[in-house]
Length: 202
Image 1 (cartoon, one colour):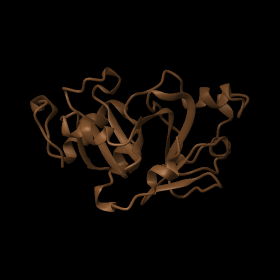
Image 2: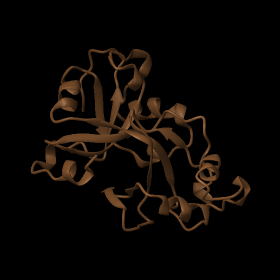
Image 3: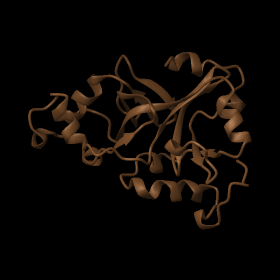
Image 4: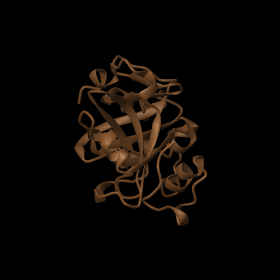
């Protein structure tokens, strides 16, 4: 994944960076059924993002212990708003690799600003900082990511696979993962009970 290459684009207005992809009922790929994806990069070269509403069976505390960042989950000291960090199934690509989407009040050499108020750090330094209480105020952890080749995402949207809308950071960082799909549809004024595969995008 070359995030910088995907982010280098000439047509800003066509980019879906900082947007949600909301899976339609007709989504053919079961891995994305009822998924909300936060798009971090989108250009003519392709797109990448993270599923933000599917949880891993592993807690953040257990993950830090497994990575030997802390010796015991009870030793974790997170900022008040970051104590319940969700660990999400970020996508089907590189599922063993971790990424942290977080508020922009933390920065390291590997941090990439995605949009206003949100950044991405793919290295262990942020996990170490979070374990000591010096990390970002708000964050979610994603294992793996979703990726599309050139033109692939555009084709899926044209085929009514996805609804799109500007992302709400409150939804991105919401600890209640099961509510994110309905909340994201609510941005568009869509009731999931009446959603069909015939809708378009905004």
